[in-house]
Amino acid sequence: MKIVIIGAGVSGLAAGIYARRQGFDCEIYEQHSIAGGECTYWKRQGYTIDNCVHWMTGTNPSSELYGVWEEVGVLGNDKEVIQNESFLHVECPEGQMDLWEDEERLRQDMLAISPEDKDAIEEFVLAIRLYKDFELPAKKPMEQMSLLEIFRMLRRFRKLGKVHGKYALMPMPTLADKFKHPLLKKAILAYMPDFYNASSFFYVLGTFDSGNGALPKGGSAAISDNMLKTYLDLGGKIFYRKKASRFNIEKKRAVSVSFEDGTTVGADYFVAACDASVTFHKLLPESHLDKYFRTHFSLRKLYPTYSSFNVYIGVDGDTSFLTDTTWLECEPYFTLGKQQDSFLLKSYATEPGFSPEGKNLLQVLIKQYEPDFEQWRDLYLNHRESYREEKRHIAESVVKRLEEHYPQLKGKLTVVETVSPYSFHRFCGAYMGAYMSFILTPYARKKSHHGKVRKVKNIFLGGQWLQPPGGLPNAVVTGKFAIQRICKKAGIKFV
Figure 1 (cartoon, rainbow, N blue to C red):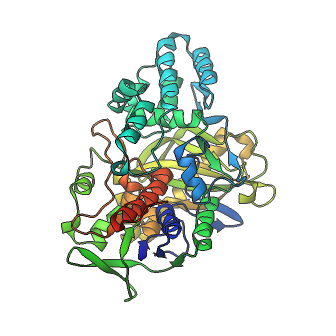
Figure 2: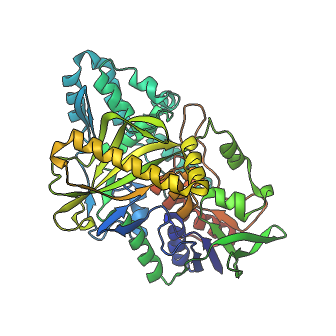
Figure 3: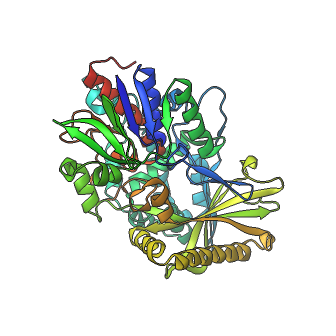
């Protein structure tokens, strides 16, 4: 039997690997010239631009997700993992602090900064400890679990119980308001967009604290290249510059998929591992759009998305004084006419191969939301020179503020690359330019999609959009789940 997969991102590659391991003939069709999807990298001026991963869930060997990363070739076999002591370093006029991997070290630092916040600090650190045991189920999709497996999963998370229910309904600003000291308030709000729920933040900190959130050496390149190699070594086939245009459906079965170059490919089963908006707004008629995605695409307040404007900067000289990731409050600047006063700064000093000898690469991330994406789209489509000028203006503003804050960098910075939210859409088909899935707000319960297509028996779904908030872990497990669902449908035991 033959499986055709649309999209060679992390989910598509995972589906291809598991399909080959089950003995299916498998072909992946990718619109781009390279595999990886949004887990991507490229070269500029001798630098490697990593436009995806800063850390990855599933790096603790005791987690279920580690086994999946191992099976797809990303972890294991002495592959090095980078585990930073600090998840985030915060710098603002009120002072500096770190969100340490060690929750006791974090507790002591927070108490030293603000003894009067003792009760809020103790509650905060307790939540991190509880969330350390909360991990993404990765062995099989929920509907294939036995009652005993579901019971064991629920028992594992029983301690979290009421705490999770409380923080899932709490906006991030409400969490920050529990603290009196302005430095602690800013540290809480530095990393996540304000309209995330607080449970998402604790999940991130708990994951990092448990050693389950680190970075494979080599970043996005290591992830996508190793997965591609695993797939090809298993005998899988991949075809590039093949942009799908539609699924051809007869009697509730897809018989083939057509491409923009005029070719058509048939198969017994199909996996749509491309962006969900591409699947439901382009490849399938509207009648196949189910309640889950209709709701998520239409109720924007309940299910918003976000992206970022990224500036990559080469440094000629030493950057050892910088931590891995810093939130920096700075003099105001503007993006698309909107005032900003901060950004995230990522240093790639742990990846010397990303830069020419004697240099280092920095990445600045500025949060962008759906209205920003629409402005970037309008500029690109209708005012191309204004689009380029706005990118230049933002990059220059960022460089100026870096030089103001770190005088030792003055005259040593060179803009290497800029990436707007619309770039994610152009190259990856990303809905609203979002590199993550729908935001987990306090206003809507978290739901996961069942991975099947309404009114079609043999198209299955993969990708981060099936399980908010998306990202690499959800992408890889839904690729695996798609093949498990196909095996169930075909009456084949998944091994």
